[in-house]
Image (cartoon, rainbow, N blue to C red; front, side, top):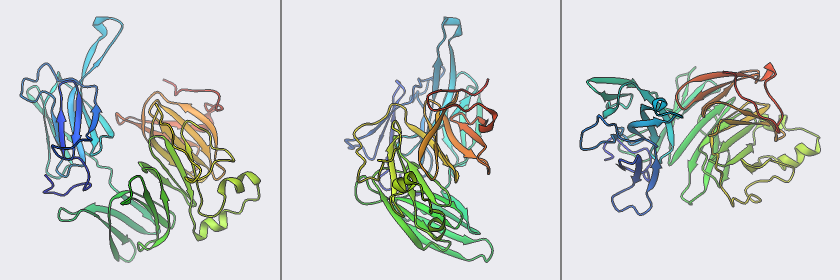
Length: 378
């Protein structure tokens, strides 16, 4: 009801759950364009309450918890088993995480007031699960930048805290989506008043804007290196070579391919995830978004020499940086939700939607060329 604030003024606040496992998210009871979610869950046979598919918002409407049973079929009837699950979605219907729960079914869900714990009623037991939100924050140049919302305001309060002097610089940002930081700068992704247009703002340690870039795609995922900012939607990737003292010194490259792709200082490179970036790849002025993808992007990460893009099927596409070219594809046996690289870019860590972490070594001889595929060992 907005008493404790809203994650976004335009975010849905009404969630309707059906016994078929489908969820309908609406801004109000008269919303003509609701968000539809197919969770794949069904109500538990042991749940005899009026609402057989428990659905519950947290206090500020940023996360929706849906409880139910997932059927896992097998070749024989004896191999078919039911698994109780809690699925978490953000305010706009994007899947965040799946939590497996023991027992025959979840009959009730309740959030703690601070949104850091959730209580689950399972048979005659009550389980408590700790929730670790994905906060908007970053650390760069001895400065901690973090954002939070206040119940009485619709925008985000962004604080730049100097860890050495203790000084704070506060600014209020409307429609803030993401914050990432690296080296001497941080970047904030915001939604503009124009539909389909978003703004990336590069800031220094006191919150002063250094550079900015308008993008015609929603930056659902974003990562930052010393000279580049990469963001991605479900099917489009954008790499922006931003303007700074460091980028101008490190952008000297005499090769024709590098010059053609960089175009000029501060130029972005945009391409569809199902296509390969080439010498003709340009910015949004040349990009035509005429199709979507059946295998959406789930997360990205980058270092100074590579960009990794993970997809729902488990495929991880590796691109070179700063010269952007598709180098390899890796096929994992999971749906990645978070990727990270070590300091030498020789090893990758993967966290899937079930919270299981796996380490992957690029130098162990398991990587193959783009035309081939590989899988993690059992």
